[in-house]
Image 1 (cartoon, one colour):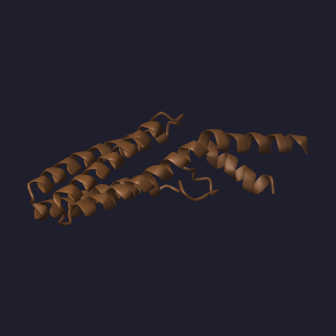
Image 2: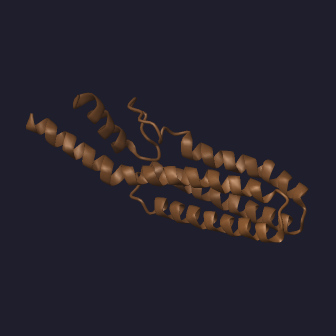
Image 3: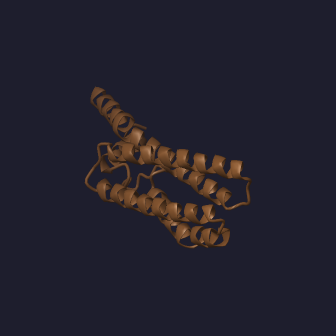
Length: 168
C-alpha cells in the first residue's frame, strides 16, 4: 500500500541522512586508528634520521586525520545514549595521544626498549579499549534484534528492522 511505501521511504531516508554519515565516520576512525597503531610500531624499528623523520611526519598526519574524524563524529546529531560513548572515545583518544607523546620522546632519546615497553604495555591496553568502544557495539553489522546500534541510535534500529522485516 502507499502508506507502507511512504514508511519505507521515510525509514530509508532517516538511515541515509542521519545514521549512514555516522557509520562512515566510525568506520573511518576504526581504520585510521589501526593505521596509527601500525605507524607507531614502525617507529620502534631502527631507522636512519631521514626515515625516522618521515615516519614521525606520517604519524602526525595520521593523528591529525584521526582528530578531524573524532571531531566530526562529536558534531553529528546524536541520541542521548550515544553521547557517553563518544565522550568515552574522545577521552580514550586523548590518553592515547599523551602516551604517544611519551613514546615519541623515548624514541628521540634512542631508548627503543622503554618506548617498546610503553607501546606494548599501557599503549596496547589503551588501543584495545578504543577498539572495544568502536567495535563492541554492533555498529558494523546490521543487528535487528532490538538491542540497537549504540553508536548509531535506536531510531536506526527501528528503521532497519522495518526495512528488513516489514517491507519484505
